[in-house]
Image 1 (spheres, rainbow, N blue to C red):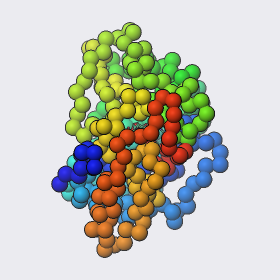
Image 2 (image 1 turned 180 degrees about the horizontal axis):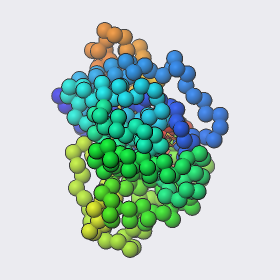
Image 3 (image 1 turned 90 degrees about the horizontal axis):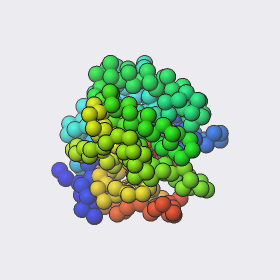
Image 4 (image 1 turned 180 degrees about the vertical axis):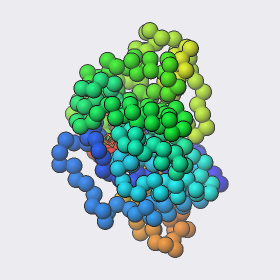
Length: 326
Ligand SMILES: Nc1nc2c(ncn2[C@@H]2O[C@H](COP(=O)(O)OP(=O)(O)OP(=O)(O)O)[C@@H](O)[C@H]2O)c(=O)[nH]1
Ligand SMILES: C[S@@+](CC[C@H](N)C(=O)[O-])C[C@H]1O[C@@H](n2cnc3c(N)ncnc32)[C@H](O)[C@@H]1O
Ligand code: SF4
Ligand code: SF4
């Protein structure tokens, strides 16, 4: 079954957030203190999240990405993932993580049926990494990447949010990782989720990132795979891995958007930057699959054509990336 929105875009990808909690405190995602965590009662149970996933697949979703907060900090995540992986009709179950818990969990995730991992890593320098994440140890993430490969995952996608004056001096180092590792390293434009003053100062346009790499390495475009996300991909000539840019702010990719989101409290969002969500909680009763499916179809029906951001202005209300799941 094909799910198409009112702008003619095929919607086949659900980003499902399972928690707002996290074992890091990245500066661009969470404030240092005073983060209001949701209570257990507010967070959907695994049974409820599974019902949403089932309904989504029933109406045409083929790829589910589990995100958070940090999805691996929620207790019981492995059996939940195994249940989602077994949904008939689902073609891809993938997960985005900060990698901190992968050394212990990678093998179990693979056994549960997760097909691919995207791992966030913003610096290879221990001090810069700690500064960005406020608490993190980069060695844990590097060990997590190794553990994922040993567990049999395909080479991970590594997500780096590029911030001027913070970690942009490492762009070429990250790109060079792909010379002898089969990773896909993706450079993400910093997004003004919280609408902070002077966000433009931090945000480096994807084209500038590409130009910096191209100054010392020849880049060739790479074809987009089926159900590809927003990344535009390239290869340094002769490299075993690839690089990608996610130009969330500048050259936006909304025309090819294929996704919807559901937060861990059951708020469905038709766009990352939508101010309104559709509360799915009233539709989560045990005997309500058709109502839930209808609600998700309605959500797809009101998906906006694009976000209201450009390099100068921001139209959305401030929101927490950790609550929405990126
Ligand atoms: N503006 C915008 N940014 C997005 C969207 N989807 C993902 N991103 C951002 O892209 C970055 C990487 O996201 P991932 O969780 O790795 O997911 P993805 O890029 O869809 O992954 P693939 O399916 O592997 O291509 C994060 O910073 C996300 O916030 C989107 O629909 N709109
Ligand atoms: C919210 S996190 C959730 C999953 C997991 N905790 C992680 O960090 O990979 C999902 C993605 O959103 C990205 N993200 C969060 N805040 C962002 C921002 N302000 N601009 C760009 N990307 C952001 C993160 O770098 C990460 O790749
Ligand atoms: S980006 Fe991911 S790891 Fe960093 S604080 Fe947000 S949820 Fe946690
Ligand atoms: S900003 Fe909204 S419409 Fe654009 S790609 Fe992201 S979710 Fe889709």
